[in-house]
Length: 124
Figure 1 (cartoon, helix red, strand yellow):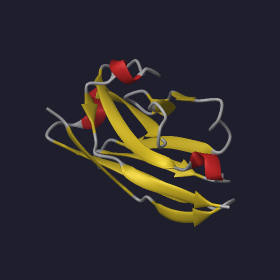
Figure 2 (cartoon, rainbow, N blue to C red):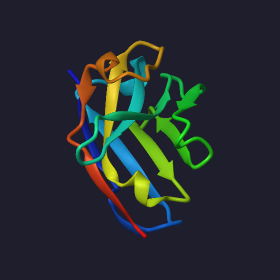
Figure 3 (cartoon, rainbow, N blue to C red):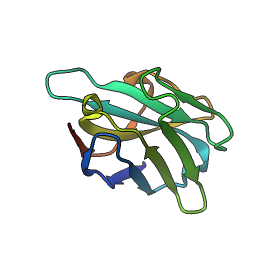
């Protein structure tokens, strides 16, 4: 069982930056692929970014490519999402998720473990 806790969310102006963290406990993250998702009010949860278990391979949604960077530090059991050039449409609750194995997934149902989420609000 993996427990995930996100942090780093907050209020930021358009064009600003935030770094989200996802700390894991219960199991070492080195055998899990990790993903970040987000959910805006009234919308479905959507894929943001993912990374394989070594951190060497990453994948991004078209809407976040070039602005967001996912990374991981397996020694610290933590995954990060560096967000830059933020836009009001990035406003959402951001969730990290874990799936056992090396291959990451862009689908919500591909992940077995989820954090509680952290709110990111981008003001215009």
